[in-house]
Image (cartoon, rainbow, N blue to C red):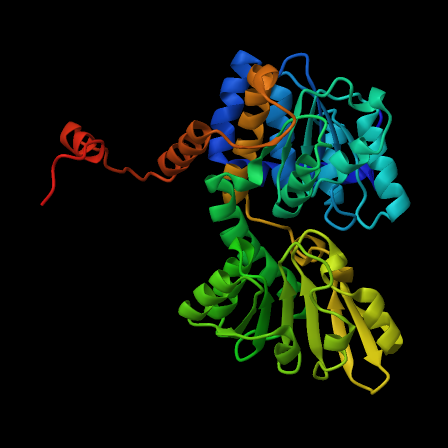
Length: 418
């Protein structure tokens, strides 16, 4: 078995941390028990390009329990937990290619190493794997029957591919499952982003002006958590409905041009390019902290910041100090990459439990239904989404009511009024 990890001696530490995550992922545990018994993925090779974290390791266990041959690489150069990668190679015998801090050349060589397995199913987080496949020779994707996509940025890229008629196989948008984006994106990103910022800087959030660029589910989560820490919240949006929602939620809404002058901490969570640009960096106050929790670091115009600066130095782990020509200092966190994974541990296992249950069950769905799927982007089937929600509630000891026959009849009829 081939693998490429930083230090295989870290495997024991990684195994203990994976155990901790597994204990907090009861839904995935139930899926694992059934997969082990039924072997729904037997004979299939799965190529996964995901953040190599403890939670991802538990997903890899489940896929392997279901009979799949699993290959894994990182979906971000800074998100790998090296002890987890070592444990996956040592204890699970999974071909993992992932090193925290790997350069761009190594990053793409790892993607290609995973694709050398000639997979049947792909699992992506950001669509770098799918993008690489679509630039490769046909023999790389000849065996592929379908794939899944974990995050908003990846779904956007894949829908663009599909709209141009260039998508080569069906993809299930796991990100769009309600048990994913309503919880993972909001509560997971919200908590882990603030965790990453605090670990990197040890700055007091209370009393700070926190500028949240983007008010999708991730932005809502970041704003919610920062507000809970007594910050002043400023929201930047281009969508009038989301801007109105942020206003009704009690936040200030303004343009990035205005906010750049008054923000203390900036977080981008838009999925778009150059949200904070050179002209905005130029007007920021001395000591401003800039971070990104969208999938790619292109949300920040880092080349523009470089041009404005006369000096750059690393002042703390994951903190780059840029001294501008006017003497003001701006602090960039985690090289502009996902701060919740670069400086912290990513989402808590309790929310990834639902997200990765969607991944596992979507892979099973592809196995059974790929012949009826066109080369398009599909939502997670509603019955899978509902079942995951029920399992999660059950694992939390929560019971809910069910409709009576009378109530069901009322909801499906039109005759009865006031």
